[in-house]
Length: 281
Image (cartoon, rainbow, N blue to C red; front, side, top):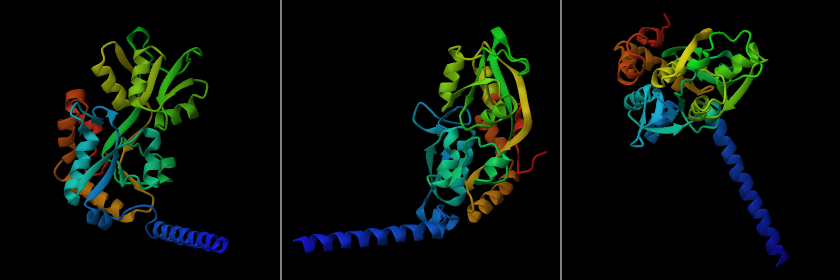
């Protein structure tokens, strides 16, 4: 009986080691990502988007994904000839979702930074962005200099706003949230003096919520938003760059803006926000 148990244990261990080795070999062969051919063969592409950031990525009353990034994602699926599986992500999870293979592409208002480019590969940009600060009309924040030490400012964890404020205004107390919905609720409840985020987001919030003003429409440098893929996924990166060039020939992102953003921003912001063909003017 003891011999059978020992043999059983040895066989189980051998099988486990064999499966583990196969798994590692599989991961080594594709480095944790799927090539364009593999995506096409599967019939589905996994794209990470926000589910609570209207009008860029959100889930409507019918449970359907909508918004500027979603409009682009659907076109990607159409041109690849595959279905799109939307994966809801938060700002802090975007890099992780790519590195673990949970998604093939991130289209969640992902601002291009040097630090992020060391961990993921960015395709050509499709939108301009800067940081902005929104605050209640009762106390409009127009500068972060001479900040009241008793006040706090809201940020979303994992965003460029968090990084910028930590580096440039280390004395300002940050109130951090994981989701945009929670950040908005915190501002509306008066939990902090202001909210720092992408200027597109704070402008949209002020336009949709009377009683708030974007006192700082541009904070720090002007940046761009671009699709991101897993580091080293050259076939998907090349396909995306070629796709963005081709879409630019039909003014696709202007159409995207007019279909998803114009009700929020109007036509005045279109030329300053939209990047067509991957070329920043």
